[in-house]
Length: 304
Ligand SMILES: NC(=O)c1ccc[n+]([C@@H]2O[C@H](COP(=O)([O-])OP(=O)(O)OC[C@H]3O[C@@H](n4cnc5c(N)ncnc54)[C@H](OP(=O)(O)O)[C@@H]3O)[C@@H](O)[C@H]2O)c1
Image (cartoon, rainbow, N blue to C red; front, side, top):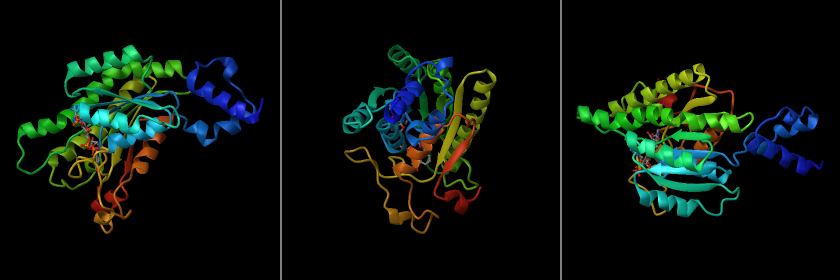
């Protein structure tokens, strides 16, 4: 077998077919080529669902997965935003990835059920669920309703959406060899800091999201689901939440200088910073119940 055909054969074997005993090659060739980044980080054919994929961090995640070959369903309440993302970034994918918009309000259980039905009718499994949608809280003068408004998407939604999709996530381990479905919750470094940052409800909701990640990881593991649950806690990234909004391309912008002296990294987070973290958690099969902090050193300055 030529080297190129061999690598492609192995990639196909790893990404699309059920495992059999005869697939287990033990040659030096197999071990060498499994270590190539192309094989280690191959996302071709993976099916993903990213909530809040129409802007900010969700858009960064969507692009990272799609350009590397995944079929990405993006969910949000605004059809206009989602369509714009699909039109702008969904075509000319170098690796045959796709971006498919579905409008839904995911703090409503009926909407979650509709979303599950729609995706399970179209797909045999869900390989990647990114619970990214969230909202922020404002000032000290908040009410009980404000707290609930923040907790619904930032905490309750993670629980209801994840548990609804468990059967479809489990199927990815049944279909693909050496792969387990993955849930990635987008929490925040704000959930770890000792400071309230003027939004108590947001910071405590993100602390809850980090803890919920660990509880869910434990529950799925102890019930023998082959599903990995982890979270990412970003620092400051450009998004509709952290800036005035987004442009025609659905992207947001924070001037680099704004954080030159405030963060050890000397800049806000970039798309690539999130992309590497997400792809790592998708492909790494041996990480469960962990929280990955991607904050340019924010927590070093602000303190836990
Ligand atoms: N940007 C940062 O610096 C930063 C730092 C740490 C953590 N985070 C977290 O990152 C996540 C993404 O936020 P972002 O900063 O990227 O802000 P963003 O641009 O405002 O994105 C939030 C997305 O969530 C969607 N969404 C909100 N509520 C929803 C609902 N009920 N149903 C469906 N979709 C909903 C929004 O779309 P629709 O309005 O169309 O529904 C929007 O696309 C959040 O969990 C946030 O807490 C952000």
